[in-house]
Amino acid sequence: MKKILITGALGQIGSELTVALRKKYGTENVIASDIRHSASKVAEEGPFYSIDVTNPETIRPVIIKHDIDTIFHMAAILSATGEKDPHLCWNVNMNGSINILDLGVKYGMKRIVIPSSIAVWGKGVPRENTPQESVLKPTSMYGITKVAGELLCDYYVAKYGLDCRGLRYPGIISSETLPGGGTTDYAVEIFYEAVKKNYYNCFLDENTVLPMMYMPDCIKATIDLAEADFDNLIHHSDFNVASMSFDPKTLANEIKKHLPDFKIEYNPDSRQQIADSWPQSIDDTSARQEWGWTPDYDLTSMTRDMISNLIAKHEKGLI
Ligand code: NAD
Ligand code: AKB
Image 1: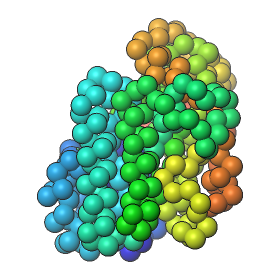
Image 2 (image 1 turned 45 degrees about the vertical axis):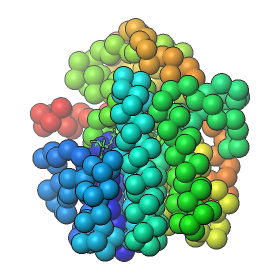
Image 3 (image 1 turned 135 degrees about the vertical axis):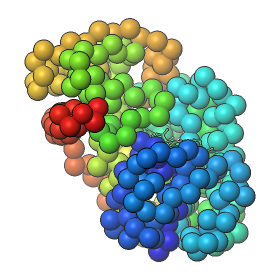
């Protein structure tokens, strides 16, 4: 990985992945891109391009100009936004991914990373410790694109010998960039609202257990998989990665240890149905065996870190 392109680099994960990759591989070697522009570290402290992944002619010139050999394809439409606009979700997630894969073949890309999600699951699987190999019957458009995306990557590995890899991320929790329209977003919003208002109106029921992961572990998993020796990989695009699982009530109680006056109410909306179709915990034995995955954070250490980061931002007037 010498010259890296990141799509969707202004998003929740892309914004922190860009910073981590620039630190490791050099700022000039990590080209960020997104369909939108924002005054941010990612866009201002290194190369940045406006790219629409549904239009390969916006991607091609950047690949040629920078002699890109690796792509982290983070541009996507997430579950809640996807249910509001299923055609947009299909177009960005499916056509965006096949464009990246085709350009990967054409320009001899050394490696492509395309994330998947716990959204690949639906009915017909054990919801606890959901196995790596299991029935994939999602009920959301987002989940359908993630299953098809995994299959597409495996097809390009088998048919063209393209080195394409991916992880089934759980809900990602972070304090740098707000999430972009998912069902697990409550687990980020709750921290912002707790620090700012000591109150959160939760859109999921108090007993909704979902798998989650703190951003430093997400970045570590993404880079470790990208750097893993291809010969050691049995799987490619669909690695389960687990870290912690909890429900909103348990998270609220953990937050109260730091902010004792914090109050929460529960008013489930349409996102509850999506959450109810996803696993509560997943089995990540393959990731541990094939490329040495192990998380650093649990609920206690993640909560401590989130509260401390957001209090610092609040005191500076940044949130
Ligand atoms: P996000 O919504 O925060 O960011 C996505 C970015 O893609 C946004 O900045 C958006 O502007 C950009 N984008 C949208 N349409 C585009 C287009 N046509 N062309 C170029 N850019 C476009 O998403 P994220 O949370 O950073 O997710 C990154 C990847 O990880 C996605 O594949 C997502 O499905 C996956 N994932 C995320 C989570 C999570 O909890 N954040 C969990 C599971 C999987
Ligand atoms: C979402 O909720 O849509 C994402 C995901 C788990 O894929 N955070």
